[in-house]
Amino acid sequence: MSSGLRFRAPQDPDFNPALGYPDHIYVYTGAVNSFHWAATRPLQWPPNTVGRYRNSDPVLVNYLVRLGVEGRGEEYLNFPQRALFDKIGIRNMIMETDPFGNFLLQGYEFGTARDWARLGMLHLNDGVWMGERILPERFVKFVSSLAPAWEADGRPIYGGFFWINGEKTFPIPKDAFFMAGAGGQYTVIIPSHELVIVKLSHYKGGSTGMADFAKSLEMLVEAVPAKSSIENKD
Image (tube, rainbow, N blue to C red; front, side, top):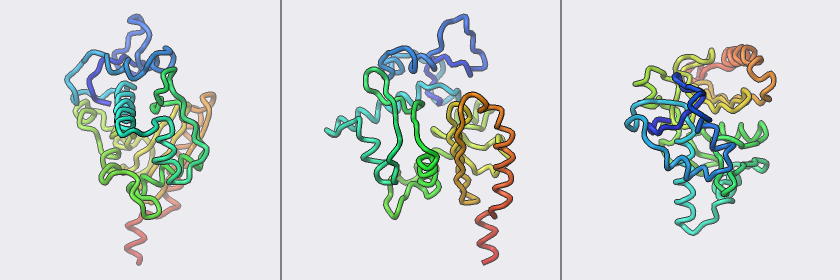
């Protein structure tokens, strides 16, 4: 989320609705080729200098994935199921596309709590599942580490596709990183406590339950000792 592309979003500190419909939402609702739209936006800042929550960057990464998969002569639409979900036991994940058949992997993924927990466990286990390496080495380190542009921007809250607990968003250890979905849905990974916690909700009431969720997280890390504490006792 630091490409520097001009991809106006409602979350921008200087967002002005008078300038028109935000690009961040347009890729969901505009019935356009989302990959082409993101790839043709002009630069607003030099790359890797300003961190902003904008869909342009995950859209472009998705574009690169499609180019890579099809460049190897493989089928794009079943690639996620074949290359990832089948390997970790996910059978119910539904991922929607734009009208051009491009996965909108920055949103519109629908899975059960067990599905999201499996994805969380994959990251907790450094990308290894049942002895097989699914994610590249150091990928989990990358997604859970503070992105340089967000640090430079004075907001230590984003890594690589994952949010991080750098400003103690939640009353849990700072090594925690998490997926944050629409309507207050979360998959929280806490390596120091070897914990994965999933919260599903709907838009209506999603924000209202955040205080209770934060309290629940606090109680869970109190109830489950940190890994270092267990090792010291051994």
